Image 1 (cartoon, rainbow, N blue to C red):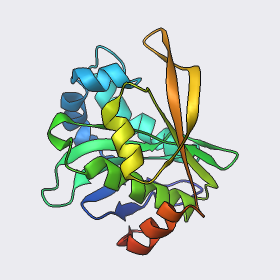
Image 2: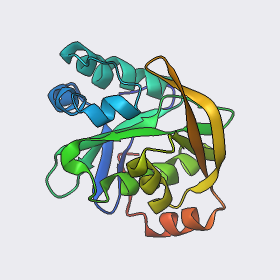
Image 3: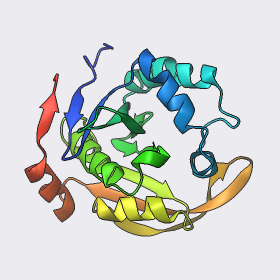
Image 4: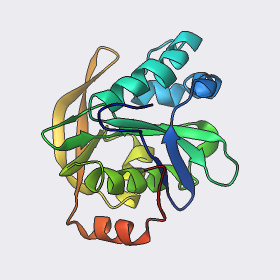
Amino acid sequence: MTSARGKQPTLTGSAVVLRPWAEADADAVFAACQDREIQRWTTVPSPYSQADAVAYVTDVAAAAWEDGGAVFAVIDGATGDVVGSIGAHDMRDGVAHVGYWTAPAGRERGFTSDALRTLTGWFLGDGGAARVELVVEPTNGGSLRVAEAAGFTREGLLRQRLVVRDRRADVVMYSMLAGDPAMAAAVDERPGTLDR
């Protein structure tokens, strides 16, 4: 995948590899997005079709890179399996607004917080962001734990900020800046970036 920005990199974390999506990943995305929790907490189409999965790994991912964001497959570094997705679909005014989902088999194993730290380090460094933020519904305990384990700062509650399946939802806003202590620690521990 190339653009005026060059090729989307592959990033390495402690337990995961973040790489650009490939058409061959469509079946894994389709299977993961049948999960009720992914459909409950994210804005993926519901019902989720094979065509949605193919479009995600080809058109949607490519458009994110073209629009200044980056969407990555989250790969278990030990097995090579797709365990999730993470990224920002664009970046505006130096702010990358990150979202993620994790397949059921990849949950509660530290993959998503590792992916979030790795992606945030890249966005605040080579990715050109001044701020990385994410929003989580207050009752989504798994995603709250991911944000906090990754060292994000909880900024407050935004009332009825998100629309999910025709309902307005309150969200907790989290952020990280390059100068935050958790970011400095993540950059020091980051194994590296491949394919720059």
